[in-house]
Amino acid sequence: MADPAADLKTTPLNALHISLGGKMVPFAGYSMPVQYPMGVLKEHLHTRAQAGLFDVSHMGQAEIIGDDVIGAMESLIPGDLQGLGAGRIRYSTLLTEAGGIIDDLMITKPAEAGAEKKLFLIVNAACKETDFDHIVRRIGGRVKLTRFEDRALLALQGPSAASVLARFAAGCEAMAFMSSRLATFALPGGKNVDVRLFRSGYTGEDGYEISIPGDQAEAVAKTLLAQAEVQPIGLGARDSLRLEAGLCLYGSDIDTTTTPVEANLSWIIGKRRKLEGGFPGAAKIIEQLNTGTQKIRVGIQPTGKAPARAHTEVLDEVGKTIGEITSGGFGPSVNKPVAMGYVDAAFATPGTKIQLVVRGQSMPAEVVALPFAPHRYFKTKS
Image (cartoon, rainbow, N blue to C red; front, side, top):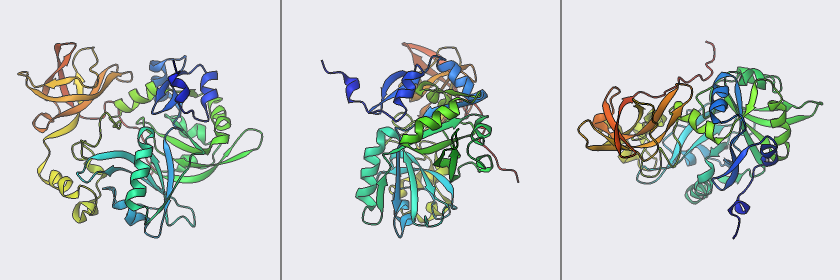
C-alpha cells in the first residue's frame, strides 16, 4: 500500500521540526507539526505569556506588478488599496461574482523605492493554487504574478516577540501594527540575512511574520528558538489561539457560501468601495450592508465544560434549528470552551440564550461578543 505521507510536501524547516520532536501531520498538502513535546495547552499559554515561533512556510507568497496594480487588485477584493499607505498591510478577501469568499489574504504595499507598482500577497496554504490561478485568470493581462516558492515564512507571536526580534533586526520594535518593511536579520557569527517583516499575525497577540529565503530559514529559526522566551508552536495551538481571538479559518468559518457581511467582516469593506462598488458581488454585499443578512457569524459560549465542535447544530430556546458551529474547542487562556458559528440574524445579539446539540443532547449556551481573549496588538504611541 502506498504511503500517503510520501506525497506530502515539506517546508524548509521539516528536519528541524523532527529534531524538536514535532508530531507531524498532513495539512494542506504539507507535512506540518501539530504539536511538540510541550503539548498544545502549554504551547498556547506560552505564546500568550512570552513568545511562540510558528512555521507557516506552507502559505503562498507572491508579488504582483503592473502599471495599475492597485486598480487591478481592487477589481477582485472589497478593500481600499488606493488609500493604503506605503509599507502598510491590508487584510481582505477574494470574492466570487456572487460575493462569496474565495479566500482571505494579506496585501502589502511595499515602501521601498522602485516598488510603487508592486503588491506583496500572502494567501492560505490550502487555497494558494486556486487563488493564484484566479488572480492570473482575472487580471493577468494587467499585472504579472510571481510566486516565491523559494521563501519560507515564520511567525513570532506573543508579548515578548518585539523584544526578542529586536536583538537581531534593529528597529523592528518601532513598526506599527499592520506594517511591513525590509530588514536585515543578524545571525550569530556576523552573517546577515535579508528578510521582509510584517507586524501582524494570527493569534491576537503582538508579533511578526518574517519572510526569509528558504535556505536561511533554519538558521533564523534556530537563532530565535535559542532565546529563553521562545518555544516552537504547532498547528494545534495556532488554531486555539486564533479561535480565542475570534479570527476566521478559511474552509471552516468562511468560504464561497459566505459573504464578508455574513462573516461579520464588514469592516474590511472600504468606505469608498461601499460608495463606488466595482468589486465582485458588490450589489449583493452593499444591499446586505444596508438591509442586513439572514445569517451572521457570532461568538458562542457553551455554559458547561463540554466543548462544541464544528458542525454542532445550534437551536433556539424552543428547539428550532437556527445555525451551526463552524469552529469550536477549549480556550486555554479563558479556561472554558469557546466557539464561533452562524446563526439567524434575529439571534445574533450578545446575551441571547441558545442551545447546542452535543452527542445528541441539548446543551445551554449564549451568544457573546468576540473576541474571547482580548487582542493585544501593538499600538503606536501618539
